[in-house]
Length: 451
Image (cartoon, rainbow, N blue to C red):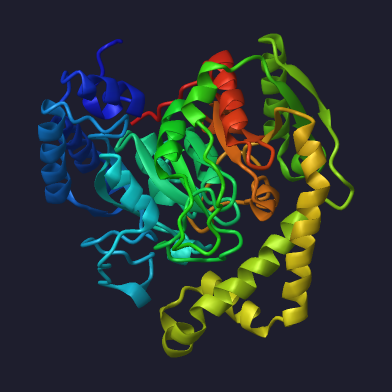
């Protein structure tokens, strides 16, 4: 391994050194904190950095490892947590004045599982207000005048800028994979309910997914392995065996890929369409089978019903507080809630039924290939900080709840990241990770912003 500063290490690289006691968790955390201090004024990725708490936790990890009590590949690894996840003793404000100063007494289940795995909570990353549309202060580390995407803005920017090796995000439309694409990193979400959302401030219960932002496919698999599993505290938790995501990487073989144009190419710009075709050719040249996958004619409904469900369920969650503190809600989330409160219940019920119908129609298509391939976003990160971009590429798959992974695949003519999205069949995260790992190796693309 070429020499790297500790903050540059992947989870896998750092974990191997920590386990062999060649790297101290304290030194790793300190390196990440120094990196944050050097860049945060420009990037604004963090809502809170728990310097003292993270260093104390790192010292405890170091002591455990010296006593040969190694918990696994996340032991001693610092992680960023999107500021909609409850963190015991640390502020959780969801980017909103309505939660200003709120300090939970418990952890979200995903955070609790990270701690059980030995991970160190480095701090809370910036989010759009209530993980919705109103942008956070975060800037894209590739170009500070461009959006980092959202709503997991801080998590994506922090990982891309090597402030932490991995971070938690969430996705209700495109809030993990789109920022991953804009920042040139890996983004992943599992099957809906695979990771508990207990203790996560909700936007839409039937659409919310816990997401992972990382710099490699293997790091995302390591993290998902630690946090996945049934949780009786979450009414939408998936009560099913958790695949061995890491083992799936070791048996990866040349995949059968379905390239999806249609709706996805219609929503992509010319540069993104051309890049996706080029990536497909590179994968074909590396040994993958790449054939065209044709979507059902009414596929667009899967995107449309996402908005209906989000409005209705956001309104249900926020109704009481919104009535008292409406002025503390920013314009986009305010409009979303008002639309949800005014919307007919019959429209929402029809959306719930259509969501199930779309999943049933798309499942045979998904099972025909090891993974579907689409553009990772409509284009590179847009210039300006007034919007977080278009979630069109992710919205349909989030709606039907299947696993997806964003993979960085190159730079555009302006030096901004471009990527593809890989879509897996229901409950088949292990197969999807195997495909993503194979594609990552075949393409050999690892991007670092010019900081």
